[in-house]
Amino acid sequence: MNREEIAEIILQEKLIAIVRVNDADTVPVLIAGLVAGGIKVLEITTNSPDFAVMIKENRKRYPNILIGAGTVANRDLAIKAIDAGAQFLVSPNTHAGVISVAHDHDIPVVMGALTPTEVGAAIEQGADIIKLFPAGNFGPSYLKAIKAPFDKVRFFAVGGIHLENMEKWMEAGADGLGLGSVLTHIDGLKLTEEIVAHNARKYVEKIKQYE
Image: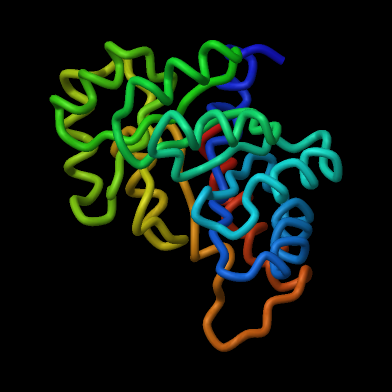
């Protein structure tokens, strides 16, 4: 797949599951559960232990799932992630080097930006999708306001998104959502593949109304 095709799948699915862990041993259960729950796009963050190994192994294990790298804050991390097989990159910040490396390898970037200046810079640098982050600190009304001058830009809201407020974000104009701990950390429960799948399925079913 080329960059445009990968970006189109991300936009069609509307959900990116963020896998950020302290213990690499938990990753097989988490990803198996997410996939069983219907997640088709996920990112493994670069601040997770052995992230490159996790990307490489899970690309082989799940050939029909889009697996990217998250928290790609600089050019060096972008190169390492792509060498491991990342199919897209997600950054927390606006960084021209990340876009340059990704596009040289024909993969898209979901580029972090918050202010109008950052959004404008990210688009000028070639960002395929804007990651509005930290979205939860500003609320859906902020997204709606920033969409006014950037009405052709595709935005994924990330940070503070959960089952009860995801509708408000989509109605405010989000093209998709990034979901982290709400999918992978469930208070009071020892995570199993079945529990993760059951939880993920709720989000997958709810987002379908915006297809």
